[in-house]
Image (cartoon, rainbow, N blue to C red; front, side, top):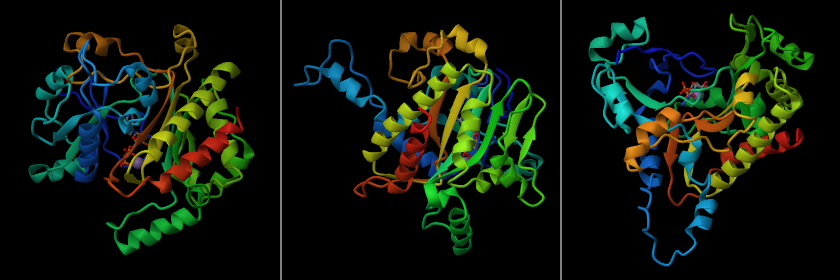
Length: 366
Ligand code: ADP
Ligand code: MN
């Protein structure tokens, strides 16, 4: 294995510096202790070793039904699989799978930018190694939606709190508890038909060209675009996201319906969790390559195949990973840089309202 890390290709928002590996299975982001702690904690809590065959929990005579009830009720069902961490220049700790361990053991992360190279000697950047959610997609269409109207917690400076309160008050973060942070959509004609209600607002941002077309035929929308959306234009936005592509109406309907179902499941999951996810996002992805829809017989899965993790049937794990099939669409929570586990504090209303409002919007499409 080579130390062949490249800049991550399809990042639609956030800080620069994310990387992918040669195989494209990993998403590696410069991270913070808080985010690594959150991933570690949730994984320790929820990655329960499966029962061995024939073994039963005392008094539990219908554990099949029980499994169904639990479908999508773990937070990790809605998070990228946590593979481990990397310290710049050091070998990794916490690798979870044999394959990843092999890959990472032979690697030394290279600094992603010049700037980082300069402070290389004492660089202690920690990298979070996650499953690349886009792996297996040919033409992923992607939107990053930041959840919540409250965008900061108590740890930030007054200046930042005031600045982000202003952003919230002047965008759909304030009115709907969610805001589009970035998006890219694929249209093989290289030009998505963008409704005037959307271009008008985005065009009004002084000096910023918020919408651009790249060389691969993606139309890319930056964070300033999302800030210009309003309660009234956000529906046009989602129309654009789900419909401006070459898929059939039925295929588009499948994406919308499954996204709605996932939002419902996530909503129920979040009601059951005592966490505070401040400034976290939903990542919604779907396949715009109709060839892959045909290969999959138009069958999408609601929850994607997770990585096989330590403790699950070891003998099959290599094979399962090779055969891991990407879904045709997915929804995931991402960005836990400001997330905490808060036992006894009840559910995270701030983001739940956003999920609910998104559900209500998508219902209008169904
Ligand atoms: P930041 O803390 O810089 O905001 P995020 O975790 O929000 O970082 O990630 C930034 C962007 O990277 C997201 O908008 C998304 O496009 C992409 N991204 C994040 N996590 C993954 C992942 N596991 N797989 C694929 N893409 C991801
Ligand atoms: Mn982010």
